[in-house]
Image 1 (tube, helix red, strand yellow):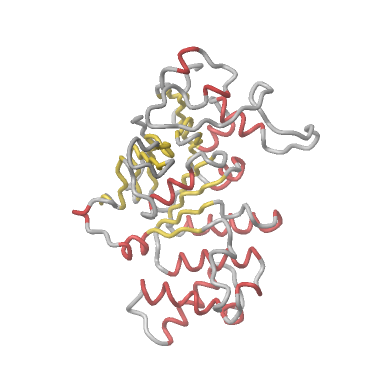
Image 2 (tube, one colour):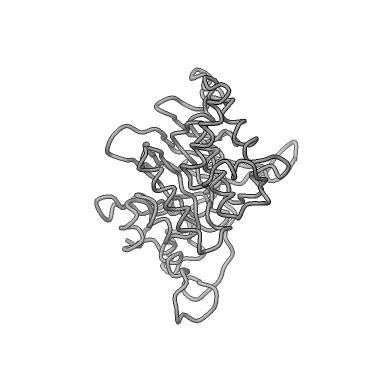
Length: 332
């Protein structure tokens, strides 16, 4: 297991992830079952009112990390804490309902996350009844309409009477955000929340989430777009094959990238005048490796232009390159 620490130094923390390890079985064999390591020693913390972005290609482990926080996956090793209480420890007695009241998830597909046969009102009422049992009768309706107005779905009464197919993609994503807010959650896991939306409305969703941050809600923002990570999140972690290879202050990570993989991600951001094609490291394409529990070396060694023999046998230690900027790379 690889130890790594990513912390916020100010204030109390509402979410702490410590050396998280997740293994998935590759087959159903009774004996000698093979496993892949989806997350390897990932650590970070977020407090209310702040955002941590996880950036990387598909398969880097970003969504796995978020789903583990929701207890959709059970950690192989490591500790997940909510307000200082271990989420998975039986002694903490955190029920799934209690966890859902504190932590909510926004998914990539706004249409797939809503039931097409029910109105928005019906889909808003359910989380309110479960997590706000003190509200009765007209108080539920007033609370629901207030949440819809809060996320920019005005007039709220007309929106509440509609079905998901009657709303635009941006409006459906705002409904998904409203459902998360309806529970009173203090922590939201946003898994690629704008990637399926039209470019013209992406900024509106990011600004809505920024307003929610100012109201004290913490975010884990998952994206493959490192530019939006810098725009929205105070801190960014760059993930590759289940490892966090570079992390720290978002401006520092994006403006002064030190790891070759971070440099690759930034080079993949479209620019006017750039020749069309796939971004590669050192002009070469290569497959993303399958990491296993017994794998050794740096996970990026097969694609790195600065690779040495040491990279194939040892995991790089953490190097601090700025006040809040850390990298795992032998080339530094």
